[in-house]
Image 1 (cartoon, rainbow, N blue to C red):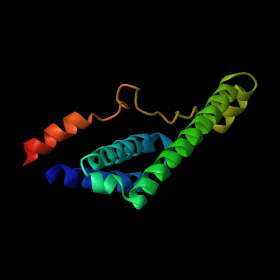
Image 2 (image 1 turned 45 degrees about the vertical axis):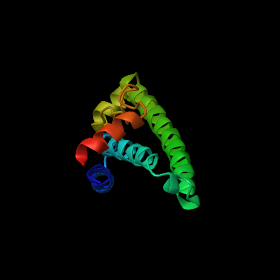
Image 3 (image 1 turned 180 degrees about the vertical axis):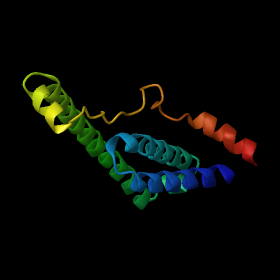
Image 4 (image 1 turned 135 degrees about the horizontal axis):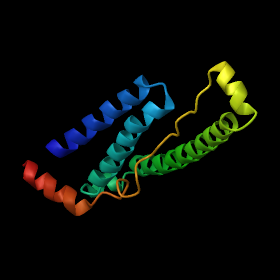
Length: 133
């Protein structure tokens, strides 16, 4: 249906956007869009029992959960390193050296707020799917 096509095109677009951006602060938006798209894809699968039971699709779901956990760990590590760096260049004597070298604070890799990351409602998806037909 139209909804499934939109979900797949959003995932494809978000993936290409992720590959185009090299700076961590700029990657947050495309990566959040990709995460939302993948969650939508998994929610769409709820409407297809034969797909949900497929071994390869179940393996895909498990891999996505594992990858999301690894990404979350990497984000925490990156943000911890950014915090330490910003403290170092913002306090004495690092402040003097940072000014001489032209170093400036680095932005955190921000993720969406908890309310924006809520699980997708299957009921809502079914209603949208009906409206598309």
